[in-house]
Length: 123
Image (cartoon, rainbow, N blue to C red; front, side):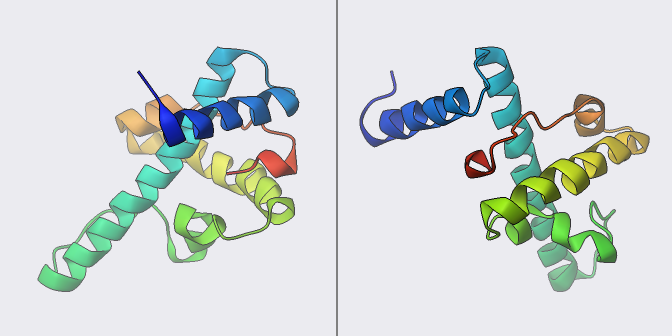
């Protein structure tokens, strides 16, 4: 059972989605999941970059040099008016473009669409 501070934060998030026009609980969960994957993708990229620095072991980049601004760690600091169009118009298309990689992540994200339309609801 979720209680205390975590419950308060989850309830506030649900309220924000509802007020932003996303009322289907499955859609809310899907959107949260997409954003969690965006963060996970960045975490894994950072882990591989650190391993490469330490050991020289090569890895397959998830973000090319000209795509670094699409990483969670980069866009999470933007204001909502800048973040929403970036995530909607650049990050999600990047997800869909990863389908060629053949990973489970790529398969999951092949039809990903950002349903969030209210800038204040951004990540």
